[in-house]
Image 1 (cartoon, rainbow, N blue to C red):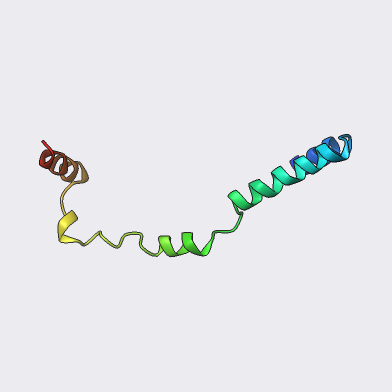
Image 2 (cartoon, rainbow, N blue to C red; image 1 turned 30 degrees about the vertical axis):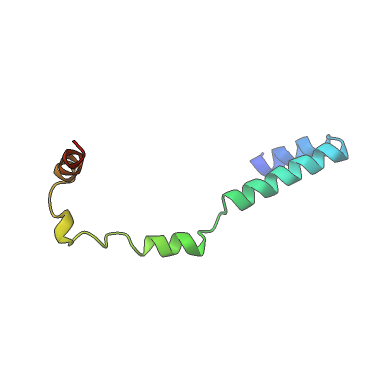
Length: 73
């Protein structure tokens, strides 16, 4: 039995008002975590690796962090 089938069987036995609450929660989850990437996340993905050749980030990441922390001391 799939998860969807198990949820269906469970919801069938609920009173109508409780079944509506399950439906509202499922819609909330669908909107909060869409199964397809949003255009915003695709736009963000286009920036991956853009700083790899930057002169500001050509050291080891740990050394960069230590240097940045040293500026605040």
